[in-house]
Image (cartoon, rainbow, N blue to C red; front, side, top):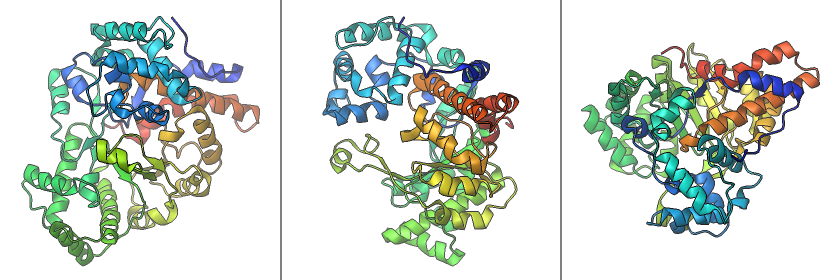
Length: 458
């Protein structure tokens, strides 16, 4: 079968890689659907599996003039025709990490025996479809084949978690855990925030119209997540500005929220205060807090109107981490047991802010390169900018943050290669000894993620 392109590894990097290449995969943050493992039915057709749900793929195709409807987004299209359209633009992905992930998925994970071209699109499509029908390509079998020791999904705070309950009840031993995502409850500016608040009240039976009742309802949901194995929360923060209001101030804003009279400035203050409340709750219950900051969402208004959110028009912005985190850190940043992982799309903040912050505050860890930067070059830039100030022990290891389950082995393999290239360079420059690098390679490839996300404690 064709062999996907892999980064060339010189001798020292190759030896390091061979020692970590087959370590178990820890996927502590991502967006896979837990129903896949609850139901364990065959994955759908190749287009619905590899193209339609993957914003990395369809945003590139849209940039080349392909209509989203023609990819089956918001419209019914023949999956084979969608795959042909994808193949006609296959070269648009050259040079991107998506191309490496997709080739790994096609040729290693799925075992496709034909090189994808415009002329072979139907043949490759049919080979994928045939494999997806086999028992060994169902979700649980692939989870085991990928050697995944733990995988965390990301679930709305009001999700009933029925899929996670079904996984537990099935007796299957794969470790799939939820992650508490309360954005719709915390940020009044989000579409659907009002409906989420009403749902929270209905499912908890608590008076969420009162601020104390609202906090108790959130605590109840966090406990429900923890009971099913959750070790983390996740927060989308487009503009980071934590703040701490006195009880009278936040009560007034909560009343205004219930009345629908919050101004935009008040809604931002409400969200900023609630992020601090979440950190305080993490001190209480031990859930690791993840903050993903700096994405301007849905910048293409026409696509938002036609298709809704999450159609590839999100763009990175600058983030002021020092001022943005000041209120949170001065409230609970010194509290024993708190752990907060910071993810940025603003690479200029790595050396200027995030590395010095993580190199001081005991609660902080720097998340791996995220979204637009989870590439071989992005990994290199990340290490070059953070290690000299933060060291290695203040990093969070790796997570793939993907909806594309079949790409998980490819993403972790790319990270491990990037780690080994970096460590080999450090040896060559006299920064590390070979013994240092031998210890750091498994730490960065596997152990730090387990430790940071407290997956070894459950």
